[in-house]
Length: 254
Image (tube, rainbow, N blue to C red; front, side):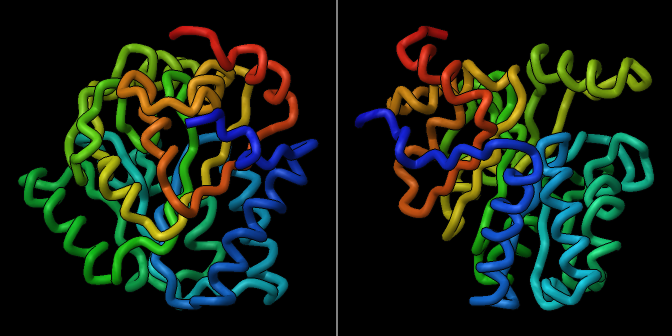
């Protein structure tokens, strides 16, 4: 399988990156207002969410009929906790965009009976007709959702032990203000691959090696992002500053 360079849309700056991602979501909602969409967290999608909220405020985006899910969260945290991804999504997108509560189903990291929560989450996605779009960020070690290197690609929603690299990255992002949990809960790679469309967002210099692994075009369990290589409807948006670095690293080993 050749490196999928032609599948990557390179964005010149953060504004273009946010607009291109928002255009993708808006086009889906125009075609299917009741679409089921899985959302990422972190720094990468912040521009996307700001753009979507601005469009909703200007009545250029109708998100009220869509159904929204999240990709992952920390195990054991309530939705009120400052680290909670559920809280992040409500604050940055769901609430200001006017999405009604009945159209929101987020992972409950503090659920009693976490295995039941995993099964119920998959059932909720199925009840929505499956994911129409999974929007993904990319971890420095190639993780998508919280699916770390050597994850089971056939798994659905499950509990995962977070890698030291992932936890260290998150400690840095929070400037050491919080203890990062050792475990997370995440939709599985099988759930992601089952989405009708996938939008992968890649920004930040720390993503060079992971993007290079993707561009090698070889499925590799050490780089979970490479599970996306065979998806029939994958769009990759990447920051332009990664283009030359990723190209130079195409043949670089892990």
